[in-house]
Length: 115
Length: 115
Image 1: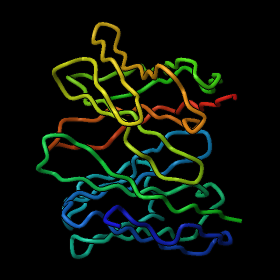
Image 2 (image 1 turned 30 degrees about the horizontal axis):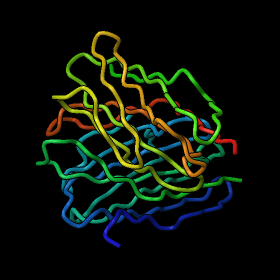
Image 3 (image 1 turned 90 degrees about the vertical axis):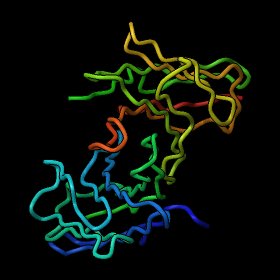
């Protein structure tokens, strides 16, 4: 399977714990995006990388959130001191920056539940 | 700022009936427009996209959408709905490729298909 993969698919944690999610983009894609989707809403942009550089961060990304893409391949999204409001589906997408069309391919998501 | 409005939260149609899902966007320049479908517990799958040219675009699974600049709309249509089309549908607008290319999504329309 050469699509976008995310791990884990589900995560249940207690309030105050730290969690980390991983995203593996399509191999030749140099752009990687993180979105958050809460129940009944569409995905909301969090941040994106071009290669290893984090080029844009949403105001939704509080100080407790950090994302990395150290070698320009996979990315991790860490949430520190989780809160119940962090419960959501976290979606990763990738695209090819040089493509004329900004088509983003999405992974299956990581569903986070904070108790 | 770009935005997307999907006025219908929930639509129910009978199998074999035609379907139209509404999408209105706000964007300062020529928009890149997308329709994605999301089945329960799954990521987003691209149905179709509009960048330029013919305002009627064809997508996968028999879907089509028409871009109407004067109405700032990009409605999704299907002439005959199948039970397997039941899912959540998201309209999204994006910036030009090669620039800040995050997608802004609507809140989605949940499609229910009755047999």
